[in-house]
Length: 237
Image 1 (cartoon, helix red, strand yellow):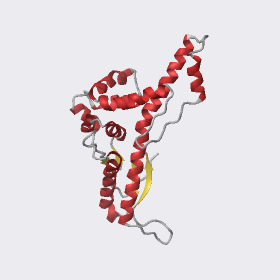
Image 2 (tube, one colour):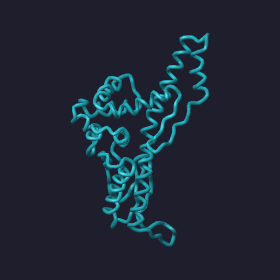
Image 3 (cartoon, rainbow, N blue to C red):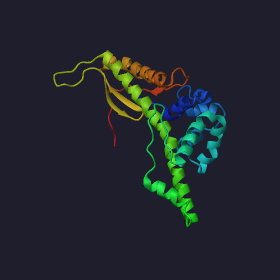
């Protein structure tokens, strides 16, 4: 199972941007932006949203992001404010309060250099570039960090549900009940007896919804999953 467009949904919930949450209702947030008339195509919607999350200001993203600024001022203010905080060397926080690292000393040295009497235009340009780069980091940190917190809540809830479905081990010590076999970012693989596959799929979905309620209360944002039940899950090169 993997979550559809986790970061934009988290941003909608963090900012309490109901307009963005409405676009996120259902399986495809990017198509939701098209249906709302914010962006013309799904491809452009993805470019625009990723541009807003990562601070893109050039190319196609630079052309499209202003449409999101107008349509979703609450959501874009969260990431925009985090970027501004980072550009001046400040720290930002995730939804549960984890703080970003402070800029390294080399970064601060570049910023200080631009204010010295003999500073050149090149010094000032370098300071501006470094400030914007750190701002892009803090812009993304608040959303990515909160998405990670949502995922931790998802896994914790899911482990409890799987344990309730079966918790045995065989003579070799291997689990015989359903258990998490793999997790990465917003994707989870559960190994389960075939007879429990449907119940496990339900548990995966319900735990995702539960994680949303735990973090964001009754704010109406969906966290839909793409769930597949297969006999064998194998990595391919």
